[in-house]
Image 1 (cartoon, rainbow, N blue to C red):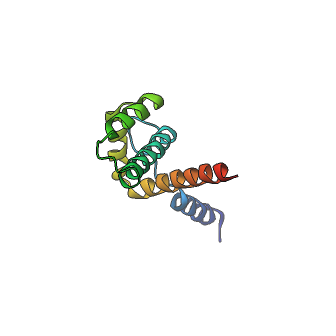
Image 2: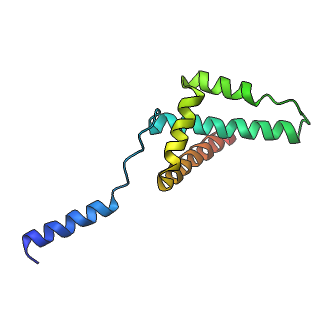
Image 3: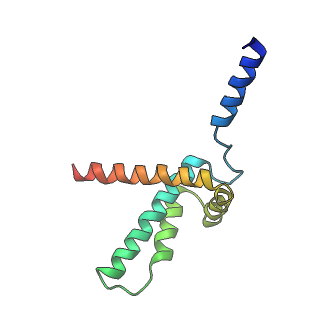
Length: 112
């Protein structure tokens, strides 16, 4: 194979392996992942309160307000970022995988 053809093959392979660029969104991926992990923990806490403690009063809004305050983001920014990732499902899947791996790592470190 001649040099120009080899170069084109390598370039084509490199283009196929690159992930699409992140969506245009208010939050960068790292911040989005942190807030999403927090949101999943909020949902788990609410589920536990409903099933184990029998609580019927919803404190979800308060939990989410505290999460957004701690992370320094607004609910609107988080939702806009989530919506932007919904337009790129392969990236959203990768974000969820990273978040779930992080949460598993946290759980494993607590068990030790």
